Length: 488
Image (cartoon, rainbow, N blue to C red; front, side):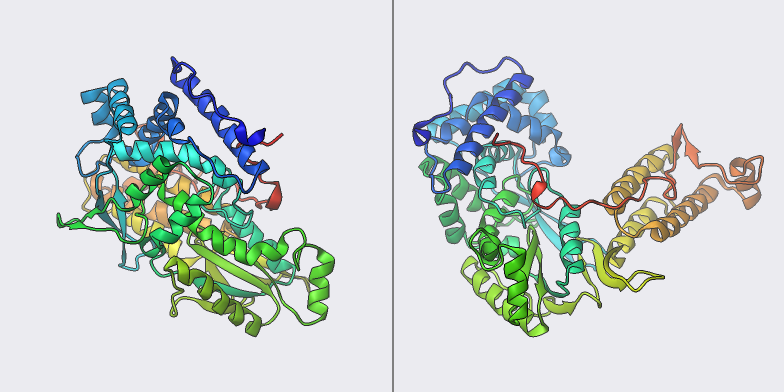
């Protein structure tokens, strides 16, 4: 009976965006429930859900609300241009008509190279789709994500609903403290660029039977790239970073690695209970746990360095059919006592001061500190004639986001030092801008009791990292992370 159940796609289109969100949420809940109830089920007739008016309304709403909405694809149109020149109803009606008739064809993505964080001098290539292509990708994601989320394992955290980088860090902390001291710190070479289209499509077909949806996914993979030099380049492998659908597609591909390394933790596996894991250790056998965030992953090993090296070879054999390979230069076997970097953090097994107890501590790595300092320098150059209010707004945005990301690390000292650096850079810039002397600085910013007043401009106050945000410990959530579509 469950296999015969269908989503009602014949209901009249909702009159308001709010009604669209409600309808799409109900559709997603049904798909997720059916996928979780029957792991072998292949879904047909999904194409009607992709071009459903409610789905397209929600998809465009997400595209327009995204940070990249002001960036145009190869057609030169932004989301605001679509709204002003065409109108959202007309744009979505035309898109729906093209999808239904089979006339829709994705355009090449526009290449845009941005510097990698950390001041390394290297660049990362992003692929910027057109607004129409982004809307269709968002619609595809709305339909496909609840299906594949039913299959994804709890050890992957990147670009998944209600999961975040801090969950991955908390998992490493937990297992490192439990004795998983050896780490395969893995780096996959150009993972998004090299993943095999054929293997990826095979994994999508395991769940999706609708040929029109499969053709859409493949069309986006094969859309090509328009380089910064104006040259067209075919995409025989990979999924462009920058597309809305790309993270989900990449997670579908890499879930094969999760399944291979996590299968022993599933019911009936060799490590599915604490008793079995202890028994393996008594017999000199290793236990391991993968923690993955998109293409970044670490494998924690309760065993020896040799056990970890053996896993490196095993991982390489799993990645090879996907067209991926580990970077020989950047992939290393490391002990927790020496520490390693992951997602901008530095994790290290250390003795707690004043005690004989050892724990895995999370520090802020050097690279993100260098990166945020470069952003501060760029905004506070002595020659800048920018409006102080605009500069403080931008600095606050950057520092709030940065501090909120790292607030669960051992960060008090770093926040204090970075706050001093920020204050000094802004003061030196204001001195040049207003032609102040230090006497003028004290006149404007020294309070009646001899303490410094906050730096303000146009009613905007510069963030004080010593007070904001509060530094707190992040609680490990593990298997208790809620799903956006509860089964009950």
